[in-house]
Image 1 (spheres, rainbow, N blue to C red):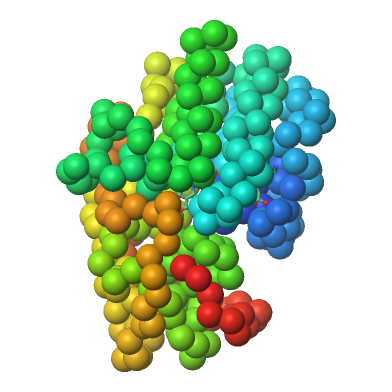
Image 2 (image 1 turned 120 degrees about the horizontal axis):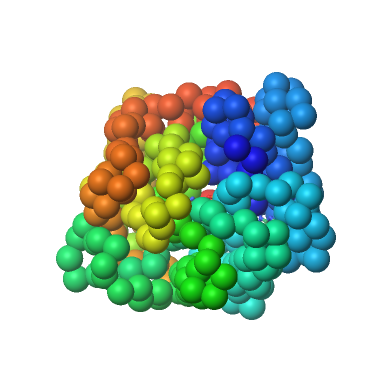
Length: 325
Ligand SMILES: NC(=O)c1ccc[n+]([C@@H]2O[C@H](COP(=O)([O-])OP(=O)(O)OC[C@H]3O[C@@H](n4cnc5c(N)ncnc54)[C@H](O)[C@@H]3O)[C@@H](O)[C@H]2O)c1
């Protein structure tokens, strides 16, 4: 299979590239390296030979269309996005530029080249807002509560328009909170990477709010398995699929699990809750199980241990300022 992966140097994107190459596929990766790291693809570059090519490019650039035309992909996996929810609150125009206009440019490239299958990384953690019951299923209407959530959902809406107008067959994977190796411990999104890296470095950890906010944590290899299944699914398979575990875990429980894994007992610091974030979320994944044959396989305990092992091999020290999570 010939594929294009946007956001190929990112946390999830690079893990997907590894998986696609391991399955024998060809990958053309596109990334502007705004948050992604070229080093995430070092091993892939060493082993894949001509099956992997990489372009440092913004998905909004006109040349993106030429890359897709030349690649003639069977599937475009669209993961490039501005992923910082807090920054989307302070600079919604920048966020929408990447996540709305960027997605339109990806869709235009697909339309011009005749690509039918697009697999899109939607935000399951933010698209439903604050649903009245959990775990939430795909039938619950979207209710984005932040600029990031709105822009990611706008991407979904555009996919729907292009499906109607041009017959493309998008699959939207609504991802819960993804964690695992290669997630940046320096940003603001990955609670597990940030907590683990700071605790490993003996630094204080800030929990925003009272620690009771819950998330549905899903391990990156499980998420990439969902992308791989979506990429090879028959054309009749399309639409929205939640990808998570169905389970809620409170932030203070995440802190406890990581502390226990590291043999530490110090409590976290608490800081005021932040604008734009939901209090509780968990995704009902029974549709993905039925129609994609997908189920999460890695428990939170095991995933946390794997993430800690990976962080132990990372030489860059954690930042000295209190990292926001
Ligand atoms: N990590 C999660 O918990 C989570 C949850 C739901 C959805 N998602 C979605 O999954 C996707 C991947 O997220 P991630 O966690 O791997 O984040 P990431 O920041 O590691 O990956 C995003 C990648 O896209 C690249 N990128 C950003 N803007 C770009 C642009 N304009 N042009 C080209 N490349 C650009 C970045 O350099 C980076 O490599 C995103 O679409 C995100 O919205 C992630």
